[in-house]
Length: 512
Image (cartoon, rainbow, N blue to C red; front, top):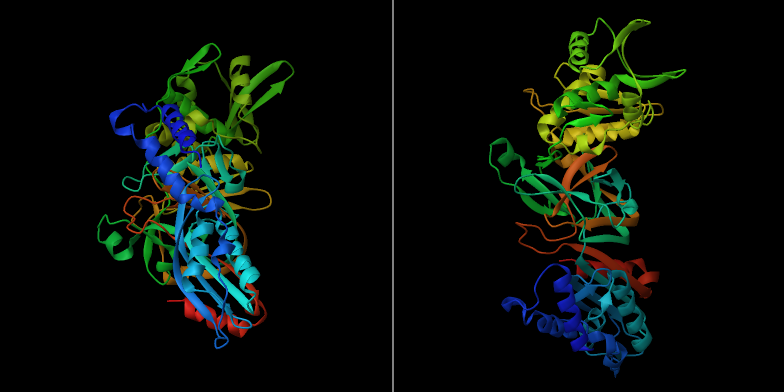
């Protein structure tokens, strides 16, 4: 290993992130990093098979188990550390055994390389089979990982995306565990690997999560939450099965100020535009008759909002006309300026909300949402709101707006329309949380890819089957006393693969 080249590279990295490698506290950092790499990658040039000295012991033909061998390795995808423990069992054949410390040494050598957990597990099993030629080998490794299933989405600056669809330039929604404030950042790392085994399903009317057993949940106990104690915690999902907990599913949001909006030769204040866009995207369209181009908003004269909509058009200081169309009245603005501006926001099946509206401060978001509801929002008895649209993108955008306003909501799909409904408490407040009870948890067998990202604040905003939750990501978070969580991988060879009884007996010995 060329330590000088490593030191030079670390200096360049420090400069690239905007630091001064000549700063007093950083002068020795390149040297320390080079020494650390020399230690954690020491296994690259070592041959683990040379460690397995064969000893003949004709007296022993039962299971030999080494339990809880500590391992420290480095993920080859991002050169980030992971740690865990290995459990190794083998049954000798023809008396061929080896010293117990020798097997631990094999684990150590293979770990001290850029690795992935699955390959590490397989390599240990194959080397033992090759050198000792036993009746069988079982290797079970538990190491730090936590991930979501293939159907889970994450909120990005460009709406909701499946984890597998994320690009390097995407910014994702992270949530501060101290304030529940949402912001968008580029992930520090992307995680994707093959998983086979039990996942934990947390499913209720408003939550749907399918995660690896050690995935971290951000939660409050039911007792703390309903007694007004602001005591939020982070624990593996497997420790919450059978408990009553509360998890958040909406956030706080600061947003970016919006200046006046230019529409051709017209200028609208941000407040007026938010109202107008809300009513237009819910009840409006653009249309053309010959060379005449119009922006149209339709409303029944019997509607409770009709007079407010008329007042809004009167206040635009833009010429408009009213005309009957069946049982509705159409407010029509004629002209190239408004037509071309609003045309880009889609028609019935592909309408959407522009990013500068979605990212605006809560006051403006509230104005927009209120005026959308005046056009196309069914208000239920408890003041929850039901939205329906042919445009899935519009419903996705509305759900994002609600989440940023601290309103819990759920999206539903059917063959022709997309629906979304906000949730309210019995006392009439917006419900930004969900309660999970023991019956909401279950174990589900899973075989497929799992995904996650790492973000600085340690929490991300995810959605599964239209249901949103604030939940953990792949890194240690503030308040986590145990820095890691465990995912299990295994490799079985010989009799452990062929004989279920032998395999079960060994697993029972491994379990604490």
